[in-house]
Amino acid sequence: MIYIRQKEIQKLFTICLFIFYGFSINAQNKWTLKQCIDYASEHNINVKQQRNAINKLKEETQSLKNSYLPDLNLATSQRLDFGRSLNSSNAYEDANSRSTSFSLATEIPIFTGFKTSNSISKSKYDLKAAFEGLEDIKNDLALNITTYYFQVLLNKEITKIAEKQIELIKEQEKQTQILVENGKVPQSQLYDILAQLADDELKVIETSNTLKLSLLDLTQLLELKEKETFDITEDKILPDSTITNLPEGIYDIAKENMPQVKRAKFTLESSKEAIKVAQAGYYPTLSAGAGISSNYYHIGKNINAPFSEQFKNNMQKSIYLTVNVPLFDRFKTKKNIHTARIDTDNSRLALDNEQKTLYKKIKKAYMDAIAAKEKLTSTSKSVLANTEAYRYAKEKYSAGKSTVYEYNESKMKLANALSEQAQAKYTYLLKTKILEFYSGKPLNE
Image (cartoon, rainbow, N blue to C red):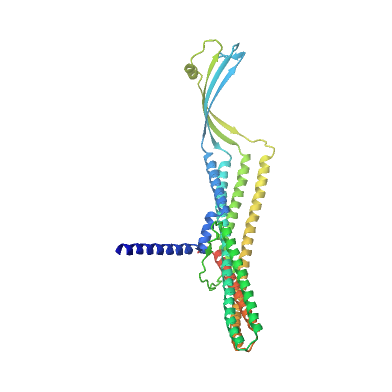
């Protein structure tokens, strides 16, 4: 008996474990906004491509720094001559010969017209711009995810409103059946109720499909493979956010923090360095070098010194300085400077455009938030009024003092008011969250 009870307890424990695990899996499928944004930031293709671009720029910057180092080259060659050949006495004779040469050389740049230093500085600005470009991609992605996330929340609420209408009409169906049986209303009104029930059920199907499509859009944006079980949390989000700053104040904060503006500033600085790089073409360059070489000769049937002896006797060592003074390069340097200045002017215009675009986005979000708040206040009053009107219409219909058309009209007005209230609420929440984002608060908090 004890053994049987132990087996039963183990079996019960296993069942409970599976049930708990199942609940855990379902809970894990509910994604928060933070989880969505964090996941997309790690898996989005554009983010990955930008990270690769950053790594490439890092390699280019390091390569420029390495150009200060001396190079070192080892060379060897084997030569065969037939017919008249130059012998070790530097005279020609009719004999086949072969020769082997070895050389080891190094060269280091001393002065490059500041081209290397300015190229490194330019590369650093490019790297900073690339990092800000990565943050800009993440921000755009986060804004899109937030928009899609709130759209799903809105569709969930609209679906609930549609489902609530079915509950109301089913209650009214029972009430109408009683009225018909008591002879207070004709049978046709019951048919009208059933027809309205069919319309409401179709509305639920439509809103459910819209909700599924919005969830699909969000999963595609996340590039999530497991789409069937994906869902988001439905935590209570109350429209209690207040807009404390005017667009100008938000813009003053945003233009110092937003990565698209920082990227444009770094790109401008990089283009200024590009002018200095181009101007280096007017400067002379100076480099130093050193080398060591030796040769081995073997001529026809002559008596030739051993390899080791020739290698030692033919040894040649050298050090040298090379000065390269540009005199005329077909106006190539002039063209490069002119092109770099045009690029700098374009970078300056791009910075101005980024700042103007940022202000427009903030201004639009602010105006949308104000409009949504006003609409929310209006629709909230409409919901209260239509709720009272529906209650009154329901009482009249239950007492047999009104028609089914009056009841359905009141019910539909309430449903429309609730839908418009939900749209205003989530629009206001979304816009205030965007304004908070531009004010420096991350979207995933």
